[in-house]
Image (cartoon, rainbow, N blue to C red; front, side, top):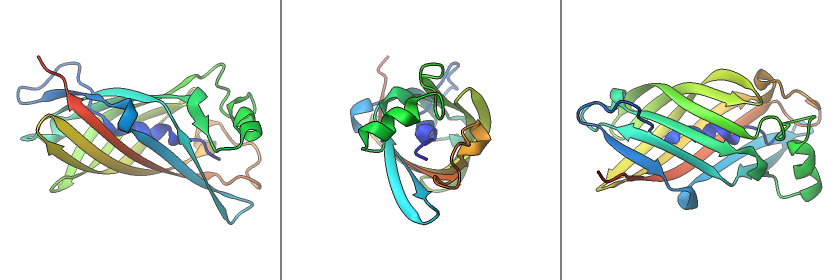
Length: 185
């Protein structure tokens, strides 16, 4: 069900106490894309997106494991391109946006897996429920900008969104593309 894009979220690097070589970055909402896909009636692939995301992060090229990210998703901006069903998804039977207007992702661990590649693990809070989620990410840094592409897989039922599972699949794939700019001192 178009639900979780929230995860997408994890791509930016948030820093409360910056390590020595780390630089702080802010997510560019205008060049950030959080998309999700799911199956309808067991086999028809459908897509959706979350149109508004914000976040901060810290990145240390010498110690990627010291990097961090915090992302916020505006769940009122969730859409699958069907006005009537968008309203249902935002209502109390699904995401209940009136009570849970944001989804957040806060990294807890960054593990480099190769040049420009990492697994970003963190806490995803969606629909008032927090679960550990791991993102497989590719990150490129150019000057004062970071470009990130990440993927994750979640189950909407893990976040208490389990209505109509025979009609709308439980498995959600998240695809996130984001850019973040260095914050000048």
